[in-house]
Length: 111
Image 1 (cartoon, one colour):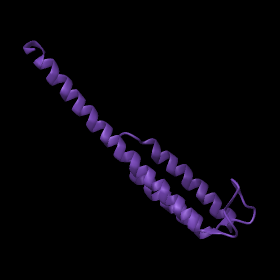
Image 2: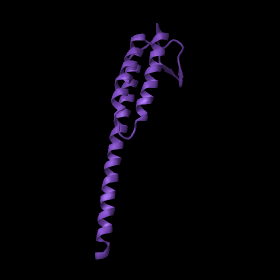
Image 3: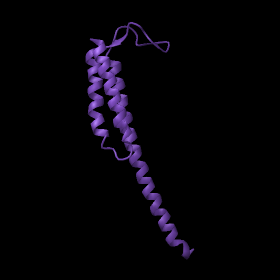
Image 4: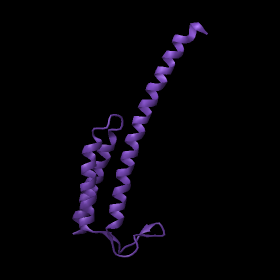
């Protein structure tokens, strides 16, 4: 047992480091998920017309308002800057920039 104390200490230190990295990744993922959930709420709050979803399809008379699309765009742009500082999951920033561009196009089409 005495010969393995050093090995055990090294493995414990490595495990603690891996746990810290995992927790950091988890925090980043949860923050990005919260951003997407908030954008979904903004989007849903700004739907004009009849029911947005009908049997799994978008109804023909439902559309997002221009101001709603602009809010979603601003939301993603703001958070794209913030998540670009993530250490582990930098791809979220690119995703949010794409979603902001889509919201911009939706805003233009809503006019």
